[in-house]
Each structure stands twice: as C-alpha cells, then as structure tokens.
Image 1 (cartoon, one colour):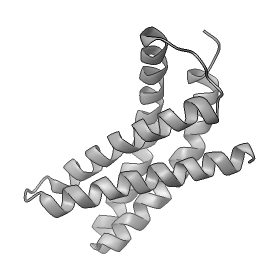
Image 2 (tube, rainbow, N blue to C red; image 1 turned 45 degrees about the vertical axis):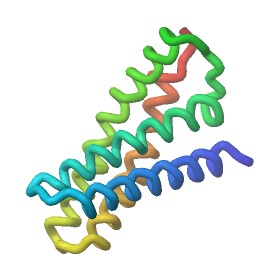
Image 3 (cartoon, rainbow, N blue to C red; image 1 turned 60 degrees about the vertical axis):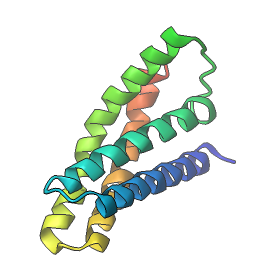
Image 4 (cartoon, rainbow, N blue to C red; image 1 turned 120 degrees about the vertical axis):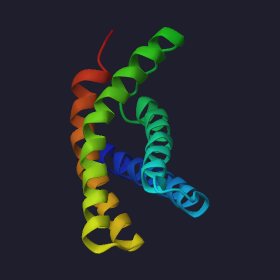
Length: 131
C-alpha cells in the first residue's frame, strides 16, 4: 500500500474515532459546554490513535523507550495543536452557520482533512527526525 493510501486510511480511522467520541460526549453531556467537551475528548482520542499508526506505519519510527516516546509524542502533540485550530475553527464555523449536527460533522471532516495535510508536513520536518 502506498504511503498516501496508508496516511489517508489512518486519517479516516482517526477521524472516525474522533467523531465517535464526540457523539458519545454530545449524547451524554447535559451542559452548555458540551460541544467544547466533545471536541476536546474527540481530539485527544484521534491524536493518540493517529500517533500510534503514524509512528510505525508512516514514518517507520522504531525508536523505543519512555524518553524517545515522550519526546516524539510531545512534539507530535505540539504540531497537532497547530492543526487542531484549523479543525476546531472549521467545525465551529459550520455549527454556528448551519446549526445542525450534519453540518458540524461536515465542517469537522473538512477541517481535519486540511489539518492532516498540514500535519504530515510538520511531522515529517519536526517530529519524526533522527534523534
């Protein structure tokens, strides 16, 4: 499988995990902050899923040990912070503009797609580099 196909498949898996967690939180939370809680919980789950898949199958990073994982995951998370702003902005804009869950999820998918393209470049340059 080509690198692009694998990266796309992993982005889809992480997106589904993210949106699935969001739906769980939105269905269970009864608070004015439920959308923020849902977006944060989904983002965290998507981040961990994508890191595990990218580390080994995209960037062929075979480093081991707590120190190596901590360094890489920290850098991965920082780069994810940049792209999360794209994702959250798009999801929130679609929610505010259209007010439906379908529109919110469409905005999320658009933001995640753009974010993952940017994130690959950031990860390649700044995260999965030789120690």
